[in-house]
Length: 357
Image (cartoon, rainbow, N blue to C red):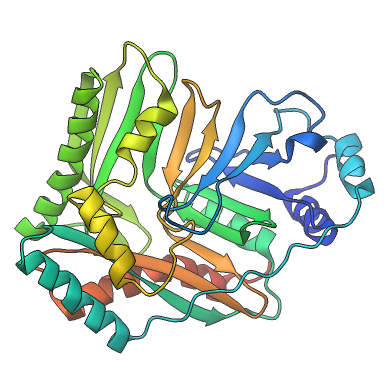
């Protein structure tokens, strides 16, 4: 009998074995990735976790994906027989209080007023006490149940510590036939009646992201097969505007394309390079893997990658939840703060409601 996800995760945590377990949107199956040295077969596809930008101190992490059917009792026994390692605790950033956030907000708006940028994403950290009965496997299962349309994951690695999340945003999905990507930007509070009015502020934010995507694909001779949106999608306590694109590429070096697309204006700002430069100047912490990307790739033409949003970093005694929002000339401080509060609740609610099953 094959062990369940909880038993396997506990074995891996007890042994200190680097791993990632993840669930692709609208899929019931869990996928596993390990250091290639312990896989029972040659590596055909990789799991990667990449930081926000190359300026981050966090390194890119690459693991080999375990092929379907290989998570057997024999392989689990092999894992149990491996030498013990220690996953060192990674120091978490400090909590961002309202006073700090307000000063950062004012600085971003000054850059906008001076004409250096039209938009920048300002993020913050919410530090919470780690529950005594915290169980990462149970939390992952809850994320998968509560957010079936997201890329849900748990990764444990000496270079990163422990991260987990449930991202609603596809960065890129590529195969031999076509390439899919989405623009997600513009946020408001979720309503029970499902009726939404989008202001010019949110619409402008959204179209900036779409414009960036279309520019990159035009420059790479991509042929647009389909464009759908913007549509309203629900994600936890908030809703977003989303436009879906599908392109045909004559020749695809998928990771080269990703390097041109990421970071998009949805997580950096616009113009991209200048806004990212300002973010590093204004924010008082290293985003690390927040707003980076993660998922599957063969580093050639195949990829299924997601932006690392709605995520948290697990420390020894505390948990860091990351959230951000787009600042434009029309932004209001209290409204933007409340948006980050709502976004952080995606992780916070799971911690409060189902710490253990």
